Amino acid sequence: MMTKTPNIYCLVKGAAEGRTRLNAFDKALLQAGVGDTNLMRMSSILPPAAEQVSVNDIVLPKGALIPLAYAAIDGTTPGRVISAAIAVGIPQDEREPGVIMEFEDHAHLDTVEEIVRQMVVDGFEYRNRKLKEIKSIGVEHRVKQTASVFAAAVLWYK
Image (cartoon, rainbow, N blue to C red; front, top):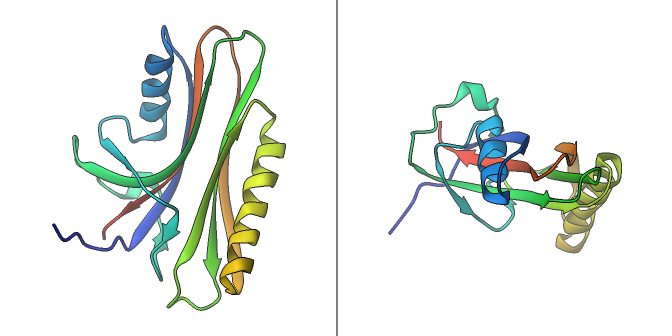
């Protein structure tokens, strides 16, 4: 089956509490704007010249198979911090693909985001590609009972 190469992407995030880990994850997906779709987790390459848009500017059909790279973590220890972040590296040469990295941990967002941004730098270095810009998004949550956090780069078509 052939598929079109996505030409737009958006960065989304969500955090939620739920009765179970799966319910918390589902609610975090809803908060991120992708909760009524079927996530297709992919490896982390941004198509060449893909344009960033807001999740509010695209229509993701309900039930559609949506390609995305994501970081997610849940927790059930009250008071514990959980964070997830995603970073996208944009190449200087827009004919080249970019790199998407994701990371999650039981740590504060500043630490998680610093790590994921460095992962982009590393990915460009070992590809021998020049990095123009890094875009990132992340979310931190202090667990009350059962929580989940989610950050993603959603790929789609214009």
